[in-house]
Length: 582
Image (cartoon, rainbow, N blue to C red; front, top):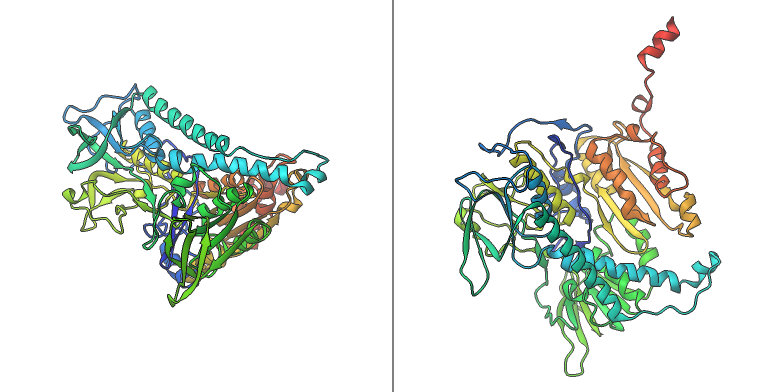
């Protein structure tokens, strides 16, 4: 699954992988508003004040909430198989869409004893498993190995000598396809094993708590459900003027098949998808040209991390770029002519250049896949295709009122277009259906870019945090640590990297953490979990980390934070004071 980043009139994307489970037992995070429908991180200075208004950092501690919100008269049965639906409904829960979000919701629903069905319109696993996170990581695994084997200087420093490294394109493509097939099978089998009914066909809502599904050429079937969850995901967004033929001009859906490796490819959009594919293509021998509508590359990153990423991931490689320009028109290669790309100035729309390349990858974001859901029959109007929801993922009608027993998760609501965010939203919804109020703290959901080295982040960027601090009247501080100071990174000869934390020195609250370096995608979770649990820097800076490990990068980062004296001071236990006075 990918995340769309909007800045001005252009979109970027965010790669993702994995799944987040929420705390059980009714534990929920405090409320948070994470941007507009698809506003994840904005880099333009003009957007910072609006970001500050949209983003609200969660409070330091989480609370148990016992309110039965949206549960109706549903009593939660002990988990036994797939439960038994009340007589007036076929199912307790019907989920439209069998991607990672729908899968996570289905498994949690069965765990809660709810009779559950999931409607699969294409293939189980959705975008993430079949056309996104999973196959892209297979290609990136190959690109990482190729970089290691071809980096003579790096290998020589380790005392390693190898012959010339090469690859077989079809075998690489097969690896990606086989991985997707395996994970898709795992998801399908896990649902079948728990008794989730998998209904094949395209699902839509025909009336409150009524869903129909079916395939073209076959009669539709209808089921009733006490609760309906929309989890239909998204599709690649292709701007007007770009002609996609799937061969020389293509989206990430086509690129993941790796049907050929062009000598020179233009990637339109320098966000997370574009950056990951530049890592793959350059490792496999292609030259890459980025076309970016904004004034700088990688607009979704914290600016300091973005500059370092450009120095490490772009400048040393066969990559050039055009910024501040739009691809007004792209024509596929035909009749012996190459792909033609007409560039115009983003602001003035004046012609700037014409590129002639072998191929063009369109990495300009994703659009919600919500057409044909029948939302108009229940007075719901989408906003730029996104289904409007409240903080509990409950769908809102045209008047802004919650629609009873109807929820929307994942890319279709646009709150945070990440596969693991979709899964977490689905689990949160099931908690509510089961009578435990639960609000997902989107500010604690991490994201990662699986380049070599990796980039990861959670929470606010430094400009966003400072804008919020200015608006709400608190001071913002920054702590940093380098991978060059980490023993394990140096042992791997991978000292390039930086970890950065943005925080409040008065309360010790963590506002954001950004990492570029070896295994950054794994390291970020200590910070994201701290934010999710409401831990302050004072809570975690004395935690012990094994030595020598990369986790010590975070250890040093927490210890580098300077808190205000009244908050940093460690209180002397009462019993110690009494023993001294005695």
